[in-house]
Length: 379
Image 1 (spheres, rainbow, N blue to C red):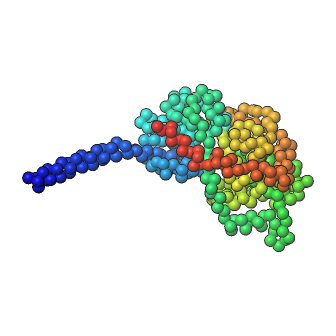
Image 2 (cartoon, rainbow, N blue to C red):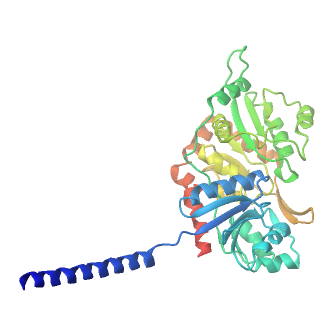
Image 3 (tube, rainbow, N blue to C red):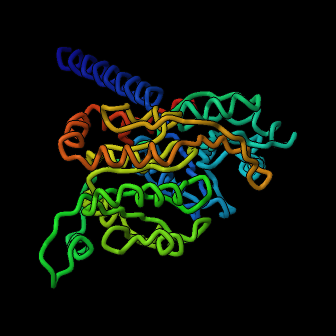
């Protein structure tokens, strides 16, 4: 009888244990978080958009299952779409192919007010729009669209590795190998070549400061486009030892770009309008004070006389571009730009501003802090 009782008790215990294991499995199944599948789409030919999309992918791939696509690809199976683009008719019309079956967030930039047709506006009603800056949010709202949020662009603030061989090449620009070494005070601009980028203003400003600053070197990392920089340099008599056009915009890798920023002592953003201005964040990563205009989005990133110099806007004009957007061009005095450059050529003042670029300042635009904020818009 005792053996039978023990067997009965053992049977009950085994049944109870199986039931508990079942409860545990059910609990784990119900409590298991679903891994979100996300497609990050952009136009890979657009250098700045591709860089942003790649940075977003590098951050979000540890938080969800995501893939990076070019917008020309036809098979995109994910139910959640993050589109990195300028908010224009073309970008909104592109998104119509995913409606109504997919959830879409447009991570949008703008340099002015978009010119939208009625169909694009109807599509926008079914898309969540997230702006890259408060300025972009203002532009979106100015044409009657709803903006869900502002998520600043971010970069990996810890990625500062350079290219030693490229640094050796840069040293030959600073002083010729066959001549005695000379100390140059160097500043950098990284920019495409369009009218709104203000490259001609930068070159004229450099000519104005050149007479009293013989050791100043302006490095313009750009390429062909609106301004014939080579011809203008000849007209202004800007010699190679004082002005260097890389003519390689979009061709340097991350290590070479890090080396280029490290080589400079401060950064100049001469553009008249931007949606954000990623090179300014890159400059902060390398603790370079920045010169820009005192208007959004520049003053969302740079603090006047703390992390850089903001020059005053003297007037704002509206210029229609390719019947796609009305650019808000903030004009400034070239003399003010030249004066700001002269100020940052002074070692003590430049060092004071550089010391203000603390880790806290940098982390405002660290990709690991900014881009996870996009995911909440898929909930």
